View 1 (spheres, rainbow, N blue to C red):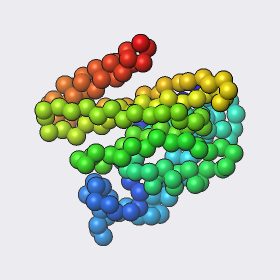
View 2 (cartoon, one colour):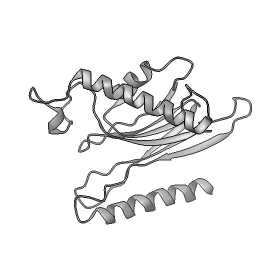
View 3 (cartoon, helix red, strand yellow):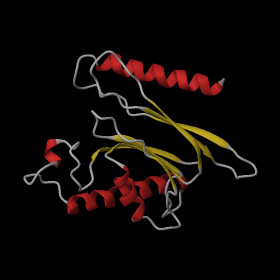
View 4 (cartoon, rainbow, N blue to C red):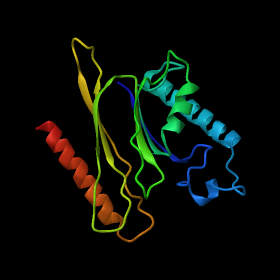
Length: 184
C-alpha cells in the first residue's frame, strides 16, 4: 500500500463561490480557468512522480492520497477526470469545508471506503478549526477484507495568531484520542 500526503496550498477551482481568498475573486483577479487547468496538470504530474518514486514503476499513482487545502469536490472531480481510467481513484472522501473556512482535506483511494467519519473540534475561541477525517479502507477483498484506517489532518499553521500552538495541541490530542479509540 502506497500513501502520499500533499498540501496543495490554496487549490481553488475556477468558479467563484464566495469563500475564496481575495486574490482568487473578482474581475481583477489573476486567477483564471487556464491557470486552474495548469494547476490540475501539475498536481497530476506530482502524483505520478510520487507513485513512480514509491513503486519504481512509471505511470503509477499512489494507492491512497491525502490532499490538504482543496476548495471542494469540484476540484477532485476535475483532477480525477484527467487521470487515465486504469490509474484512477474510484473512491474519495471529501467533507465540505466549514462555514468559516475555505478548504477541506480530501482522501482519494484505489481501495473501497468502508466507512468514514469527520471529527470536528470545537473551542471557546472564534477560530475555524479544520476537522480530522477518518476513513476505513478495505485493502483486501470482499471475501477477505483487510481494513486500514487512514486519518487525514491539516493542523493550524504555526504562523498567525499567538494561540496557534494551543490550537495545534488540541488537534494533536484529538488525533491521539481517536488512535487510542481505534486500538481499543
